[in-house]
Length: 530
Image (cartoon, rainbow, N blue to C red; front, side, top):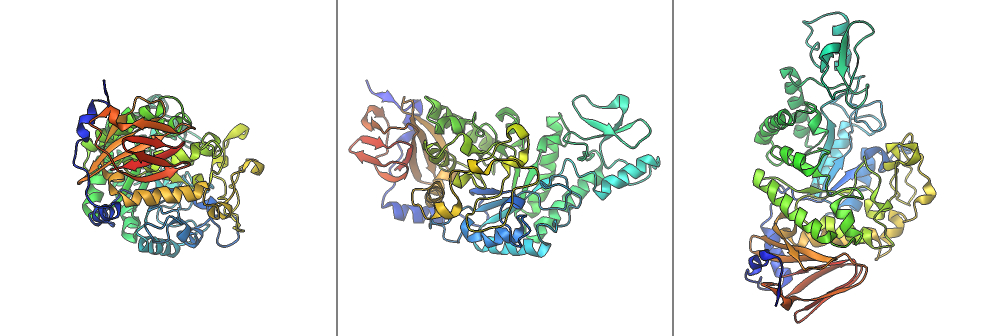
């Protein structure tokens, strides 16, 4: 008796695409608006650690400009550059810290990073390559050195309730503090405390104050009018800590107003939670998918060849992508492997095992707008370790060409552990992880259905072979992954309703071949069928 590719296999009886792969690709690409489209591969840059242009050891905006051809050289099908289409910059605003999530001035560029004119130049060269640039911004809190907070403190110390900044930040008397929130003493006398859920140097703004809401809106408009393409909003669930419905309502209101003027803007939020909570925020804005990330996420478990995990991944991606798509027309699935707040993935997705290559395939050959953390493409390492410092996760990019960028303040990571090479060494190696990332992104660009399509899981009843049935505007693909360290062969004739008969792409550490109905996929390799 023939097995089924789940019951969903009946869905796979669509007519096969006619003509060559090249002709099909040209037709699909012509239907995509390259400006308005936000289905992009993103690249997170921790600015101070990326590339130093002036020799002071601190990465800067000019350093990113100098590396723009590495990120995207303008040839969408090249594969020799990385090929990313979105740059997410860590906060660039003035701040007393190296990480700059405690902003003192939301209307300026930190002099360590450059000037507003440098930012404009970065926007210009990026836009020439159809690369969008978004800024990371923390809006739930500011720095305690921010002049707004200083005026707030002065108003309270003076008992000046008429001062416009008296209610600018969230505060309470000792007995009225909210459960679950963190507070610090406001001034040296009295019974008043200000809310500071991250750190005493990061006071929380008061979003019950309409002046604060108006200020946030005008701040965002300032940068959008300058040419910035959008924002990554830090800590979206901390606007009203512990009150999800109020948070979602606020983000809906804010972004609806922004989208009226900036309909093509790219907005994504950080809601570090499980997918049930993330889904709530997806009613208002796209959110990074934390269920995919870290060593225990769906992606790493599958990439490491754990038995049965490829099906867990494909079922989750298909289900959650459909769920958020039903909630908002422009919703995007936003997977990632790791970011600046997590240990780097090279510690658990190794190059030698092939897991790093497979992780790239699983991340990039899927729906939505995936994001790569800088250095992930060369297997950079970095963990908090015994020093318990996030600086070890934000180390200097390993260019290998004399770049003077240094590790950030407080880092203690042993440089001898960086064993995977540099950009310079990997660029010359056709088999390197860096070159692999370039190839996978170029492949993704050739098939708009990969980012934009409707996904259904394909279950081969195999511990290591799995994938998706993908449809988009006449295109019909099967994206398959072998996460095992040995090749896998299946007879497609055994799967009722399996309508794919043409192997069009292979990417990974092995090869793939379709002989009649028998499909063989090499170890840590993915393929696409039509």
